[in-house]
Structure formats: C-alpha cells, structure tokens
Amino acid sequence: MDAVKSIVLGIVQGLTEFLPVSSSGHLVIIPFLFKWDYIPVYYTVTLHLATLLSLVTIFHRDIWQIIKAFFLGIVKKSKRSEKYFKLSIFIIIATIPAAVIGFLFNDFIGGFFSKPLYTGIFLLLTAVFLVTGEATGKRAESRIKYKNNHNMTNNTGSNENTGSNENSGNNNNVTSNGNKANDKKSKPINKADGTKNSEYRGLNFISATVVGIGQAISILPGISRSGTTISFARSFGINRQESVKFSMILSIPVILGAFIFETLKSYSNIFQADLKIAGNIAVSFLCSYLSGIFAIKFLMVISKNKNLNFFAIYCIVIGITIITLVLIKKF
Image (tube, rainbow, N blue to C red):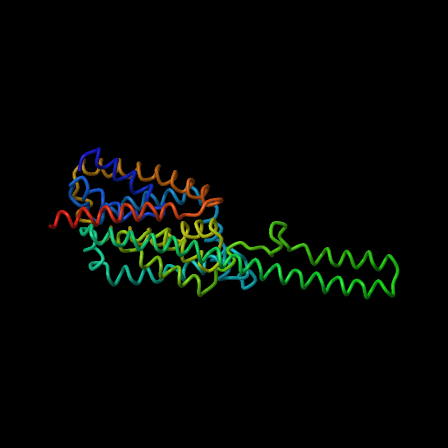
C-alpha cells in the first residue's frame, strides 16, 4: 500500500467513523471503486484506534467524569444517583451486545468486508434507520414535552389554589410566604420548555439495551454505528445532540476492545511488517486522527439545529450506486 492510498483511507476512516454513513462500509467501497486490494482487518482496527484518540481528545473531561463516577459509585451508595454514574452503567449495558456478537461471530462478519454488494444493501438499511429515528424521535420528544408541560400546568394550578385558600384567611405576609414557597417549587423548571432538567432524558436500562443492540448490528460493513445508535436513542425521546454525544462516547469501549482483540489475533502480521508498511500505517493513523476530530466537531455543531436525514440521502445514493456497479460487473 503506497502513501496516497494510506492518506485516502485514513481520511475516509476519520470522517466516516462519526458521520452516520458507515466507516467500515467505506473501507470496502473505496478499494472496490479504485480496484485496490481489500485492506486487512488489523489495518482497519488500527485506523479505528486513531479515531478513538480523536474522541479522547474532544471528550476527555466527560470520559474522566464517567470513569471517576463509576468507581466512586461502586464504593459509595450515595454516588449512585449521580448523572455520570448512571451514564457509566448505561454505557456498560449498551456495550455488552456488541462485545458478545463481535466475539462469537467475528470470522463470519469478517467475510462481508470483501463483498461490496452487501455493503450497498446495508447502506440502504442505515438510511432507513436514520429517517425512522428522526421521525420517531420528534414524536417521542413532543410526547415528553406535552407530558411535562401538562404536569407543570397541574402543579401550578394546585399551587394557586393553595395560595388562594391561605390568602383568604391571612394577611399580606402569608401571601409573601406563599409566593416564596411557589418560587422554590418552580426552581427545577427549565425556562426553555417548562420541563425539568432533561439531560439524557429517555436513557434507561431498556433504551440502553436497545441502543446496544443497534451498535451490535453495526458491526456489519455498511450499517453505520453512529447512525444506528443515534437513531435508536432518538426513538426513546433523547434529543438529537445528546444522542450524538452518547453515541460517540459509547463507541470508546467497543473500538478499544476491537483493537485489543485484533492486535492479539494478528500480532505476527503487525510486528513482521517492514518499515515501509509501518510508515504507511503511521500516515493513515495521523490522517484518521485529524479527520476524526473534524468530523466530531462538525456533527456536534450541525446536530444542534439540523436533522440527519441528508446523511440518509447520501447513504441511499452510494448504496444504490454500489449495488448497480456490482450487478453490472457480474452480468
């Protein structure tokens, strides 16, 4: 593999690892389109390690808080109700399906990495996940907001009634005290939509398990890991930006585990590589790391105000193109 191929594959891996278009699928598509040899799995996993470092660079504070909260929660029960401890548990739960599937079916899944037809089909499935996730996510968010606004209205009404009863038999001082009590009750309410603190609202044992199943499915090339996990999280009412962030942090243990597994499995090939191959891997690694940082920041910015359906359109176009080219080549 020459330097040009190394640079292209590194950039493609870094960009597509976090954008919901399937990095593994593109590492099948690119060699197919340019008639390159399919790259070995250990090379792919090495590029994944580069994107893992991209994640650590961007989210190192969150990662540290999650790790610290997990171990503190094990020791102290009082810490188990904190946000980061719960998040660590949900990450563990969502990681289990991918770890089990990857370990049991690694050889079977590896066979798909040289079959672009399946990659094209799986890209179409990614598009379905993205569109469905956005549609169900909007409905779920609307239901949650309606429920919380309804509860807030009921609480406000009951507070007003209580205040009026108290005021009928008391003076202005009592009214002032009643207002203070109402103020205290209203503090947890979010100014934006009248709901309580909603960070990762909708994330629980069930939703974490379902998101984990989505991550397990995405081991197949063409099914985007980020696209699937974001879409599955959205369907439970987790807002778009929080779904994106959870998806990215969730990928850390899976990428790290895959890297360790493939390194142990292919260590003889890795350590027998000559200096030229090692240099090309290093070039790919750097390109993947830098483009990964760009992709993370880009997705975090656009997810604030835009849905991800244009990525679904991209997956449909690329998927149909690959399927068509494969069929033409066969016939």
